[in-house]
Image 1 (cartoon, rainbow, N blue to C red):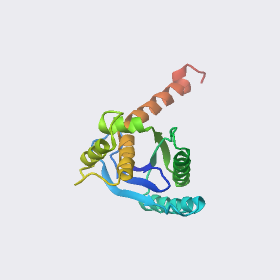
Image 2 (cartoon, rainbow, N blue to C red):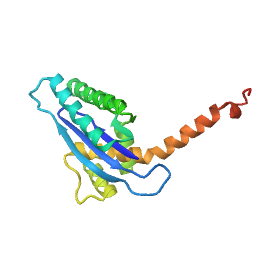
Image 3 (tube, rainbow, N blue to C red):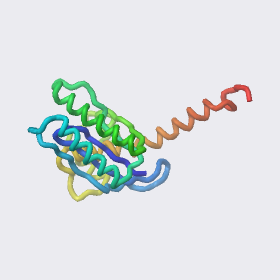
Image 4 (cartoon, rainbow, N blue to C red):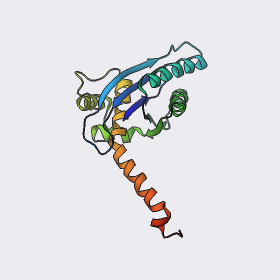
Length: 182
């Protein structure tokens, strides 16, 4: 399974491509790509979004992820920041869907809990755990790259439970298991 984690942003959009064992099998995730896509702050928004789209499309084409894990946009005090994060998130999700990827969203607390064991972990703790879990020589910088890796790792941790839930729901919805007529 290849997972693309995206920490959406218009100025800095973190990304991480992980090669991970399929759900239910043993193995350690491995980072294939980790970094940040930047756009010039002085450019018009539509041009920045187009640049981000171009970079994300190239990243997806190169690595062919099966799933995109992206941070769920939550309420923020700064409306301007929330808008740009939402726009970047939308571009990433559309590019992923157009490439045939599944898309999952996780809240910041879900990511921190899955990676650091505590939903209130700070950026330094998340960076340290990403370093440890991926066997990196140093914590990823900037924090946007570490956050993208944490999103991908969160999905790797959550995927087995999500797959089991889908199987259980599918089994209970089938006519033979629901008592329906044949």
